[in-house]
Length: 454
Image (cartoon, rainbow, N blue to C red; front, side, top):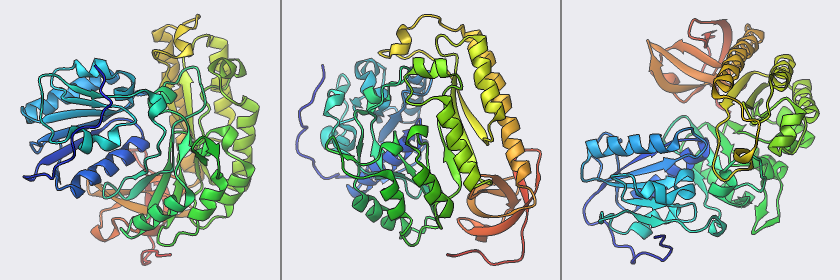
């Protein structure tokens, strides 16, 4: 049974209940989990680690991740081991797509869909487990409201959600079914959030969403544009770096590329999904561009920013992808001046057009092609790193320490290693890239300079 009514009026937490969060999937999910965790803390709950015997577990799921059901079951099982009487709520894309399926998993106490997840404290009231799982999952058409979100205190950089949902209907994708139609926050609200983030001493903001190039739709109508958003953010003081997350090639305009090239704060790094280098497959996928446009975008970026990092999403094994068509993709990527690949092995998703298509590629072939592209990705990444050796860049150092080394990323997304120094955590420092070490990151020569503060 699917409930959509409001739960009883919220009561204050009488004792300090402990709540833990687990997030699967994309940067957007991390931003949303972080925001929901702050909602709990404001209501008097104590946020703890997953293993610290929480009273409540909130699991934010992903539908793009392969084996979403297996991962969800495994996390629930672990949670029950840690806190046998803990209350377990499942939210996120998988929860919207298959709420009843999740409700049958042993140990799950509640499932909340896309329109309900930001109201879970109100809906679940006292987090008391019943005989069966409570399900709050209305139709995705009801997910019309934009819920702003950003991650904080989790790492050196913050993920700031500016857009949600998607109006594109790619044949392989369930995201419109899981997140609804394209909708955005306002530029005024986003700038206000960036100012809040700046007050926490975070140095880098990654602007994220489902289809961020489609930014600007409010109540079904386009009111603002992506270029206006990045121009406004560039004026925010206190943030040293803004990074654009994944953006569709047909929505990455010359104006935006040119702006990033001369911006003080937007870094030279683009992640641009390709999905296939074959026009035949791109048409079958329902993508809104052909390879010629993609090549033009890469050429424009590199013409203005030769040192720019370009990441690429690519799917292998889509129905109808013959060996010849796969090799079109392989050769296309091999010749492009890109920096790394995110390779996805195509897997069937219920309620997508692709799942009904003929000419299914055998899984063994899909895996072989994935391996080929992952090897190509390593070669591309190494070549990009080698091109930049001897150059001086700014690194934002992070808190992770491994074998006495700390790490960070340059503005153009090269991962560097340096001798651990606690004073450098969350600091920007000029370094010269020296050599690629055996772990694949770049060792640096550190000049005797103070940290950089803009």
